[in-house]
Figure 1 (cartoon, rainbow over the protein chains, first blue to last red):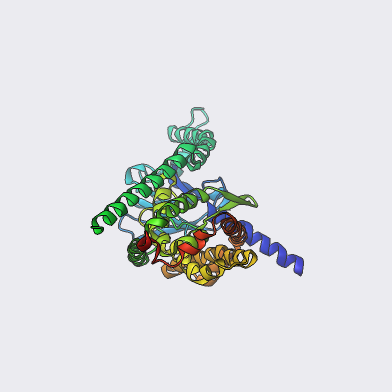
Figure 2 (spheres, each protein chain N blue to C red):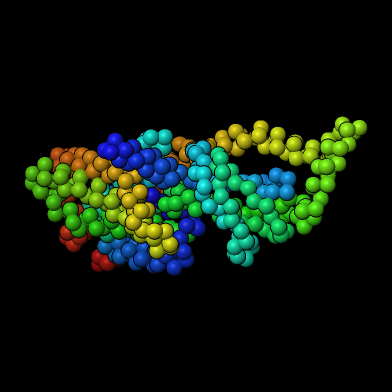
Length: 195
Length: 210
């Protein structure tokens, strides 16, 4: 019993510290007729499975919601050709947000309900033509590129998080400069008040 | 410990801004020429301390050092920590510019609080007693900051108690470390420059005598 308690304690510890110390990142891209996206922290730890992702339109009206699945990925099927805003609350003041403009959405949103199945059937029955459908090919390429770029994106996110020595020194310099200015103002005031 | 842009409702952000502005104003009024170098140094300490991450498990939490700033600066902690937060937001993207007010209140108000509670204690002739109060100040400031951050989030809609528990739990190591650091700093001041502690607390005096 006590062991269990301890484990639970340690677990909350681990989870919360993840949630506290880092910036959130969120991004989304198209995958066929769906929008796929990911949310997580800049240190590479992704959002927990089951985290709610709410979808808003450009007037901040809620138009739908979805949940995060494996590896911080979520999936949403848009039905309107408008800007989509994805918001996920990761707790403790960490809100991930990603805005997808209308022109980034999957193509032909209104049509997609009838089109893709037909094409899929055609591609399967047409044994004479070994060429893959153009749409399928684009989708495959997009997927492959995304997969290749994934580690790079993570690296860039981690890199952005890194504070280089210059900015630390710069900040300290600013503080000393401000201290000097305050000193100057105080000294002037004192000089004026003294006869 | 920094709340990010967009996590709070507008009312909370505005209220935080107003309180922070009042605190900064009051702190500037209480400014004293003798204190300015110390204020600058402590701002720099605060600015850099947040870069020191304390590893816990796979991740880390960072130091804040608002307790020490509060002990030595009193109300001047408001402008000092505000400057630190502003630069952190600009240089490192910690927190954000719109929530600067809330963050300033969350970090500087506990500093002022521990100043009133513990500054008598750290002036004690006995080094042990002074160190004890300094440790209380260092840990207590973190605890209060954690609670204020949670309160700000609770006002926006997150459930207070579970969130507060998690935030406080995660900061227990920071409380211990800061308590220790604060105690060491006060012990050092006691040995090297004891007048720092005495001169600093009653606000009137030093400027008029000068």
